[in-house]
Length: 280
Image 1 (cartoon, rainbow, N blue to C red):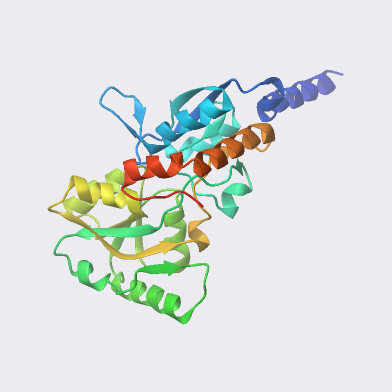
Image 2 (image 1 turned 30 degrees about the vertical axis):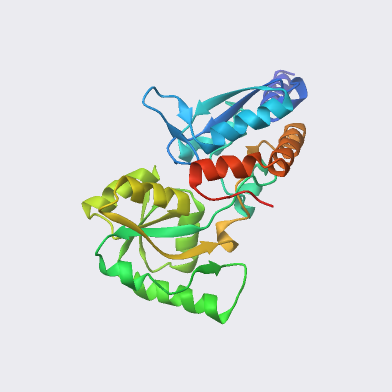
């Protein structure tokens, strides 16, 4: 009997975490952000979370008639903490991938952008990574795209590439450029510090983030190479929610679609990125 009671208690406890949505009307929503990935999200000197996603969340929550609170969370624990019920959603430049969809659900995408390389100005990589190709779409298996990947592999042979841990860029390197020396960081800005210090040869990340690093070091860092997208780099950026919270996902889906249609996503992305990242 005691064993049965213990098992029942465990099941009830698990159900409480996994089925948080059952007891909520979603008038108050906690949203996690890394706070270290500008212009998507960052932290001001007072410790307040700011950025494109914070501004967009305010619009989405107003449409949902919900009071939303942002919670800072380190990237490498951001999905486990969602599953444990620490917050209700992740809005932290998280790309929708098949691997992540095995453990959490995603809303429709609210943004998309390619990945690019950053190198030191004057480095040999500045010219060798300039493939004279504007874009590489990994969803298309063309001779041109294969040739571009082969040239990237040749240019980066013997070089050290910095990426943020547990990201689509890390997945890209492991799948398409497995022979390149890969160095992972808890935050992409730390890869930027190592690039400027000469401890790595290049970094690879979302174009907007690499551009932000280059703007902070205008005399030292430059954006190079083609814009690489899709395939292992995912379907776009969406909010992550627990699989049990289908009703919350539906609310966010509707708000994102309305915000996109009304032009708010485009307006905010131009304000923060300098170009439109809305998914249309």
